[in-house]
Length: 76
Image (cartoon, rainbow, N blue to C red):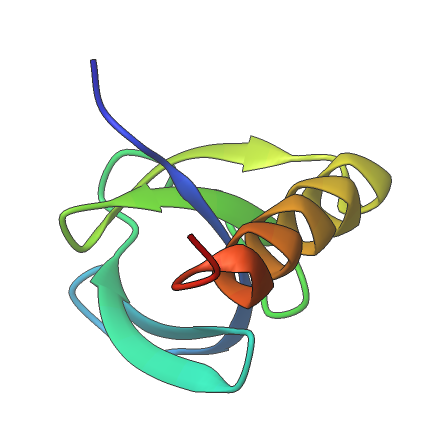
């Protein structure tokens, strides 16, 4: 099983290289698996690769869930 992080694509360069951000973190990613991606699209990213485009509403729900989990970290 892999964990896909929802990220918003901010810019696209040539050779399927793009930049995406989530929760204040910006990373280079490959959009080779989803070449129809445009800036502003949300994608699920695993190991630096966008695996699929996702609906913006669903992306925001998942980001909120990750933020809740991060806020609970260390409260054992």
